[in-house]
Length: 91
Image 1 (cartoon, helix red, strand yellow):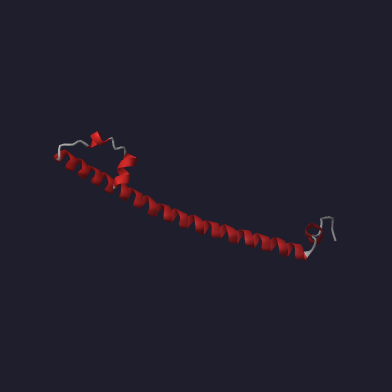
Image 2: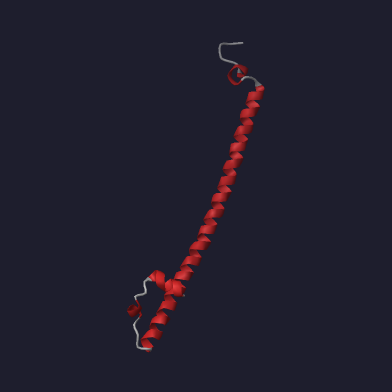
């Protein structure tokens, strides 16, 4: 019929078009699933970030009270050479 190529000559017939469509649908489903996983990961990240901030606040308060207790007993927290990592170990 005309000078342009036919669909069957481009895609090896109708079955090839169906195959390509199924692959495209599968890729779209995988992309949608990846988006859902990304959203879930972001939500989990927010939760963990809040927990970390809460822990840091509690750690700061605990350190403050420990410092006050040691000062009352006549000691200074810096005398114990407690860096942050070691301090967290004891709590």
